[in-house]
Amino acid sequence: MQKESEYPKKKMRTMQAVGRFYNAFKERCGSIECRALSGLDLTTSQGRQKLEQSVKARTCANFVRTGAQLLTRSGTIRTSSRLDIIRKIK
View 1: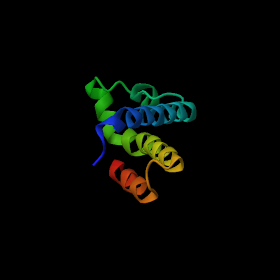
View 2 (view 1 turned 45 degrees about the horizontal axis):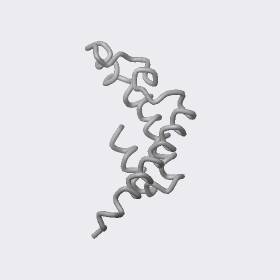
View 3 (view 1 turned 90 degrees about the vertical axis):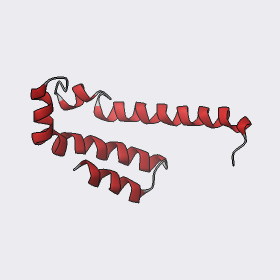
């Protein structure tokens, strides 16, 4: 069990790791926002329909793959976990 006094230090390391991932993903993909990445307005039924018809399997899967690769390289997740993530999005 972790000591309560360790929480602030672990929280800071977690926030730093999230920041590194955020910056790396944004640099690689150009954005972190679904609307910009997919080109769809998901607040509309047309946008959601197009997402399900084609964009999710093609475009979103590629961005999930990129994110998983970045996390794997950083040591945040194992390769087997990355593969599970990619399979679930398809």
